[in-house]
Image (cartoon, rainbow over all chains, first blue to last red):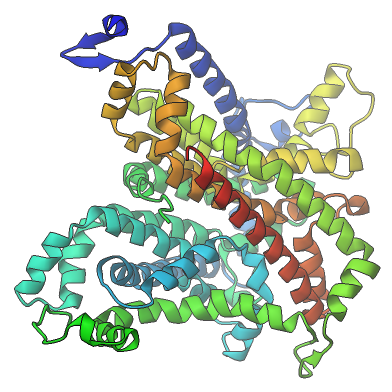
Length: 293
Length: 313
């Protein structure tokens, strides 16, 4: 075949046709788009370190000449002047993030194990329901959830933050898909023949094999809870979260631009660091996130 | 336990019901494992949606018992509620403008990124995913499009002599929708985008080689003949994320343009729902609004799923 001649090979492997022009065009467009996406993030970070004199300067600047921690100091002094101490807000946010995340990981992992590796009537229908649930915006069930939370006596308690997170659909979906393609049945089968209980197989064999998936769920769930702000379920000031108290303080408007940027910096810093550390695991998990049927 | 016990049962000897019952008894541990999640899932995801359907046919304020009103809420909504129609129109505009764009943009960017070397890939993934991950980063747009000359855009437009007085970006009816759509797209590289990145990496290299042997000569043909058919499952997941995100849109408008925004430009069904649920306490009516959101979003999802499944068959 004439065409065969055109293929370049290195070590007998085919080198795919890649035009230099195409490479250039793609890199150029990607960089351009990337700059557009990164610019607001960059400005948010820069503003957090601008002194007041540089925040209110005309024309506005894209850089900072004398970076300062003043905005952070002001933010914390503003927050410590509220009657509920700042540490309490931070504790609340950390507490609901940890308890919520721990709960969802346990519940969704064991449910996903059952859905992917055990065989019982109804499991296909149940998983279909999970997929349908992914197709519904949270706002749709909001009113009845509100009624339920109040009837269950969870109004104005930590439970109101935590419990809805335990029913999170996406985590079960991701975990189930990952288990299905990453745990071979043969391993489980031989453990079953050795007489290990299902609970033990789940905990000692399946869980260690799906580390990327539970790391991913930890990151997604933690990020979601970490940014939990004002909640219609919470009235007590002592139970409000760090983001909620920041919102209250910053509602004073334009004069708080610096503090606003400082708080945004704190709130985005944690998820970004966590993502950088776990990125390869997350991508591995998302590899099996496809919807098969 | 579901140990493979040799039981003297044969499927042929049993009716379908008996066989199902047999499987249920044999695999009861499966139900036990599923139960804890199922309780929370049913309670906080399934029941709320189903109960909303029922409550939408009532008049309810949480203090008195719900009163059956039939389809009155819906009739009221479509015939007498101008703000509902505004919200419906804006929700549809947001969904049509952001949903497909977000989906296609996420895929194209993921495809671009996939052609980079591994280090560059990880870095660019972080850059694009960051706005979606850090939900509150968009507050910076309040400064970028601030109403006075200290705002970034106004400041520079004034400096360059392009405008004479600052533009009230988020109060000007001309700009609210385009700005909110733009910001939504900025934040749209989310879970679906990560799924695309991962899916692209997962396509078997041997398939590209085989395609090259079969006469595929450039990356565009590769995309069409190899990549897209291999990515179908990830495209399905990504489309669900894009559509569900597009129909739930509202928070960004509230934070940046206020609630309600000037002349109700950018006022979505989510806002209308909030108004009736949290301010007026007309929960039956609010449920009817949520049912409309549900039908639109769910319908769009099912439709798009059907379309994507058709690709390449």
